Length: 211
Image (cartoon, rainbow, N blue to C red):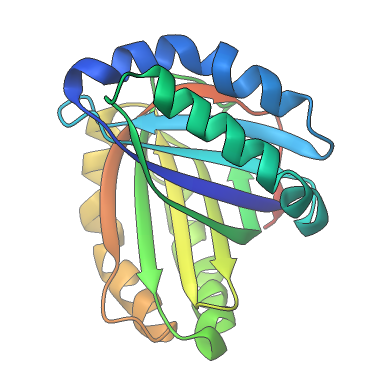
């Protein structure tokens, strides 16, 4: 499975409207693309910024959808009347997906991004699977963890989802040191951490890959 992650610059008064139109303008047409495996939108209600991630059956399906999804993103941004701007689009292989709760809106995400070295990407993922993931699964409120890697750039993104914002915040101190060591294993100096709320989720229950 592969994922395409889109970062969106927004405004606080634009996020709610984006969520209301996301199903019609983005999710519905995306479902019609061959190999589509799911879509989620995460937002920051204070800034209006958001991250959307779409999952695809394999790299070929993701690449085949590129032009159509570009058009969909552009149309959604244009419909916002300037309240939304697409700032970046990146992709990666989903190397681990662990879920103990069905994906749904109203849960809370922590996105960890490490810009490492391509030749050390597998080492970072191995450290994550051996040390971080087992700990995450023991923590209160854990719902899911998804890890992606771009082997060309060395970028590793790990997204975790928690039942409540309090659960997410309580877990942070328990994984902070492992986050640093995993980033170092991948050749990165540190991990960028973003806190977001899941505001839209259309991912089949039980979806998982890797381990």
